[in-house]
Length: 261
Length: 81
Ligand SMILES: NC(=O)c1ccc[n+]([C@@H]2O[C@H](COP(=O)([O-])OP(=O)(O)OC[C@H]3O[C@@H](n4cnc5c(N)ncnc54)[C@H](OP(=O)(O)O)[C@@H]3O)[C@@H](O)[C@H]2O)c1
Image 1: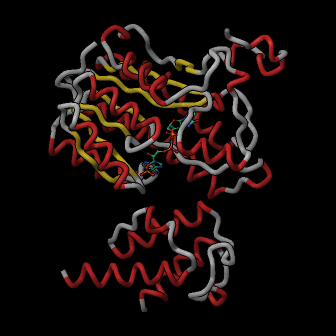
Image 2 (image 1 turned 90 degrees about the vertical axis):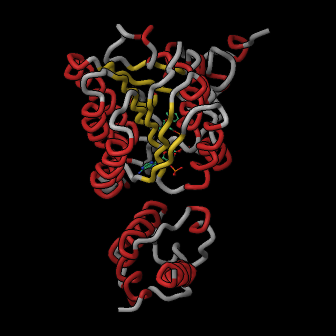
């Protein structure tokens, strides 16, 4: 698999899963544009790490919850590069609240960043992919199809993202654009460590048949595959990366069922 | 309107509290600003004053006064340049 000469935009590519995706695509030869929102230093560090791999890296600040900022970002990409080969919609935000505490502000904030941005970025990206084809991969989570505590708004936004993925896959297919999503269970990131500490998320190794937690690189590997020509016939799918958690009821079974020598 | 007054208006609008209760000593908790309110206030202030407030700096703000001082210093700095 080689992405040499390709140009990829990773929203929220400065840290966490986005950073792992950016580094993976770069390791395969793609030049990377990293979009960030609040953490410039982290994004610039990731850009340096990408350049160390021998490809080009560009950092752009855009709150993808704001359509005008999305336009500015794509105007910049259009003016500077005149093309785009890969769009990774990874940026996400959200407010963890019980249903009765959800208000319009929290709903709109989360939907705008996690779902609407995927549509607006895909529209702009598709124009830059005209005549050359391209790949669009969005990052989802298991909360799109399973109910997790305090995860309602984010879960619903991810369900919208996955549905959008199917529609985009069909409508953009004639332009040679492959659209898919990757949904992960809890991934070991900085954010998750915080949630562990606060007791909001439990260590789920026990419930993972694969015997360990998902790490950002697990997600990045699948994203990179979906960006390769080998994945040409995969369209509109949401690939689950969860070590098998969602296909079994391991959490309900005895501990001895999940012991790996 | 001073920078402080402008920021007070922005914060009061986002948190829907009466602006008279927002003093320089008020913590975000006292203003009933949750993490979403804080981010939205930061974004609105950044746009109003054309500056960027890095998260690393914002996390150091202990109260409304710290927020205002940061903006005051930053806006003056940019104007001087
Ligand atoms: N961690 C998990 O357990 C997990 C599980 C399943 C799916 N996911 C999904 O994987 C993706 C990445 O998650 P993560 O855990 O790596 O995230 P994270 O550590 O919380 O980081 C969020 C990323 O999104 C960016 N971002 C947030 N709001 C943005 C906005 N309005 N505009 C532009 N960028 C914005 C952040 O930029 P700044 O750095 O500038 O703030 C940061 O790069 C998300 O779609 C998430 O839903 C995560």
